[in-house]
Amino acid sequence: MIPFLDLKKINDSFEPQLSQSIQRVLDSGWYLLGNENKAFEEEYASYVGSRHCIGTANGLDALRLILKAYIAMGQMKEGDEIIVPANTYIASILAITDNRLKPVLVEPDIHTFNMDPFRIEEKITDCTRAVMIVHLYGRNAMHPEIQRVVDKYHLKLIEDNAQAQGCYYGDRRTGSLGHAAGHSFYPGKNMGALGDAGAVTTDDNNLAAAVRALGNYGSSKKYVNEYQGLNSRMDEIQAAVLRVKLARLDADNQKRRDVAAFYIHAIHHSNIILPVNLEAASGVIKDKSHVWHLFIIRCQNRERLQQYLADNDIQTLIHYPIPPHKQRAYSEWHAQSYPITEQIHREVLSLPISPIMSQEDVKTVVEMINEWE
Image (cartoon, rainbow, N blue to C red; front, side, top):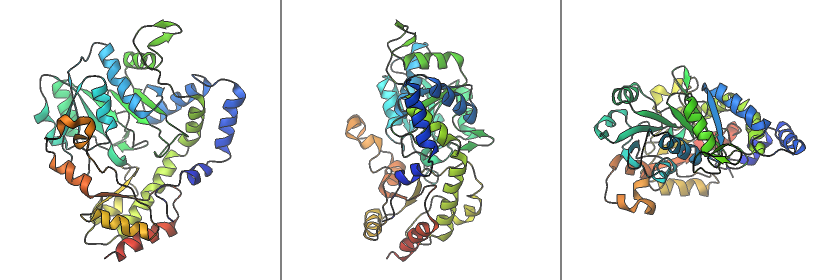
């Protein structure tokens, strides 16, 4: 069996440093808001290129807290509109509706899967307060047109960087491009914790202070509550684990690029659409604007292909089978039509990719796909 993602093997590759980091926390006797958290926040902020990093319980909370902080600071209010991709994991949208803000969905570019920059301006109204870009599947979503629109209408730019740790836009890393960014360290991410964990990065001193307080019951001083906050804090074990993994993140992302480049060069099938065309394949290994959190192909006979690969001991997943506007959670949107998003959700299939995947396994995946009839 070639697993989609072998988390145990990935974590084993960090030994003995991983176990040592956990033991260090156990020996300290301090399990929340301690030295490991402080050190990770400083190291990750430096890595991303932001002034502040605030650890949170998970990536969804990171986005929730950013918006909640803007509301607490009087820069947004209930009913304000946030532009967000129609093609995204539902967490991006949940963070908006949880704060009683209104998501305004924008179709993707079918070639990048990310929000189409040239469809944003037409969705802006007097109620628009922010654009939330999602670096989906590990691919940079930022674009000069997005910056132009944000500047023209004086909007906040929020990044959902849950899938793109280490990704670049030009000479800057994603997570440092906007006014604030939410990050996820769910175990399956390029830099995964041993459970849920997340973070907010920002250069805004006031926003950082508000996010930190809101995630700590609304308190920046014990038993003194400035806001009606949440309990959303990264624990010391996750911070210690992430410090170990951060040191190898760029190298691991490069290994993902190597796998992606091999797939793109070697998969030749008339019924499969690759995420990058063959003409661009030569630059994949050096292109740091994609960290290949997922390797997504498109196929009109997706279910048949997935079953064929499963029959040949290759595990694949679908990210994602149902678009947010078709989910029961947002039944009021069911009549809306986003044909590009719907096509993507009908056709995408995620192939195995990870920094510990063997060359033999990569070749086997390619051979099986090329032999598919």
